[in-house]
Amino acid sequence: MGEDFANGGQAMLIWLALAAAAPLQSPTAFIEQVYAEYRHQGFSPLATPEKFFSPTLAAAIRKDGSGGEVGYLDGDPLCDCQDYDRISASVRSMSQPSPQKASARVHVLLAPREARDLRLSLVMTRSGWRIADVAGPDRRSLLGELQRSNAARFPHRGSARHRK
Image (tube, rainbow, N blue to C red; front, top):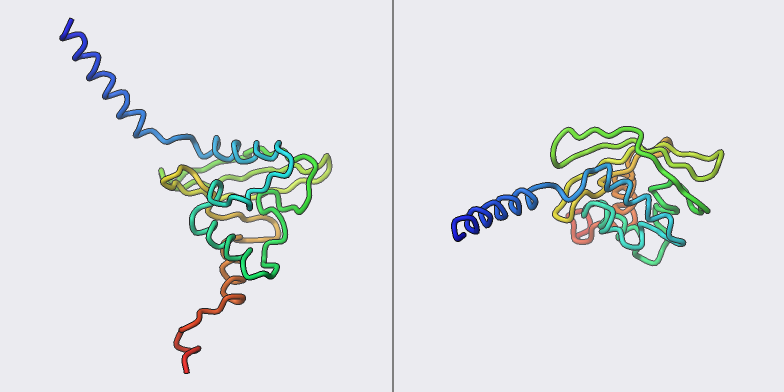
């Protein structure tokens, strides 16, 4: 009996170690989960950017919304829209060149005749998959545009060219 318990205990430890090493979810499942949030009235990924975006993109989004002025973002970057009644999305393709990076093409349907095709770059973080950048027909890089806008709106104080 004791030997059976010991073997069972070792098997359980091995199973737990393997489960802990496995990713929490696939990049496709993460994107599907994100777009499923749009079923909730008034959902905006910008309200809690850390849940959906990489730390770098979330920080750029928060900075864009600070300062008391309207920043670069004037809508929801995950639907490329300002207002919506219903949103549905489907992952058209997914590539994962490494365990920490993935890229998805997402088809977002806003209305029967209004759709967007977006490319989402994803990274694996301590919290799981997060969106690192968004590109679409009118934007090559959300992160790049936010960084440029933030740099123009919030010039570095104390840099060499601003010292007297």
